[in-house]
Image (cartoon, rainbow, N blue to C red; front, top):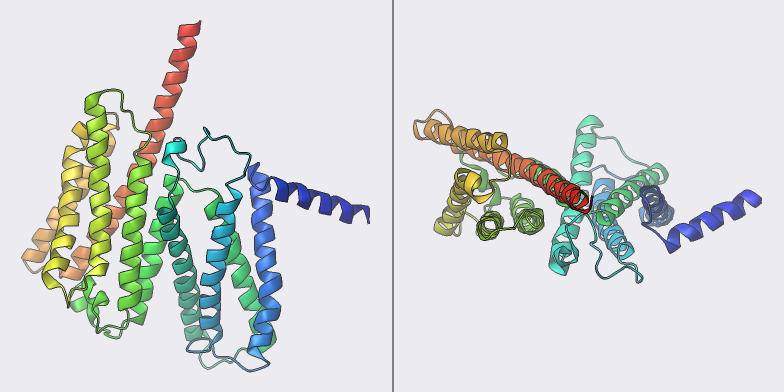
Length: 374
């Protein structure tokens, strides 16, 4: 009995200050996952109604887990964002992992990020169900163990989504973007109605005649919005002590925002219906990226020279791939896939490098201030 009272007291303290420390944040995330399990299990069992379920397909356990997981992800993400907005928070203190109060995430940023979490849950559980279907061909799923499996999926989704919402930084956003792109791309490839899509180009997955078009195009649109979000907040802490530094940061941010807009437009304008616009925005994304790489030493001279060389290498590889395509050695799909991997891996490394540069500048400023006082 005393132990139960102690646990109850700890839970009340956690709920009063849900994000006070990393340990408390983990505890609240576990509580969110437990709530998803406790609610999801009986509801799933009642819905299944004692029937034998298929692993995939309409009305299957995989479909139920993916749709329910997307709903749970939205609810847990919303709860996580509400938890990082306590009423007694100082107005001049930054939230999340950004530079200052002026760099807080806007509502449309949160809608896009929450949509990415929901899409990851939906496509992820759908993909896992597809793999299980291939592993257990023709095997039925009984209602009781099926309800347990679905409840576990809900609990894991709630746990991950709450933690992701409670601590959003440019670095975690970039990792979310990478996971989202990978899951979305593979989901589109697996669900494509054209098994020979790779013989044309990557954009053929988004054609209106392809069953994979919704997954592919929505992935690109949400990813483009996230890239624009990352572009604003990742560059917020870069040094702007001089007019040249301020102009360089603005140009860098503008270039990354353009990359995000062009990426979203690739999904908005399918290649079979908007051929010219689709190819223009796709080419424009690669051109803007190459221009940013070439101008990086002048735009952001505070970044390490090794990182600039890293970008030059990427641009050289993409140019070599273009030559391979022009000579018929590679098809367009291979060039697009490798170029996409290079571009988004560079964005992730840039975020890491920029965040380290911001911390170094802040540390030097503190040391200089202490030296002046001494």
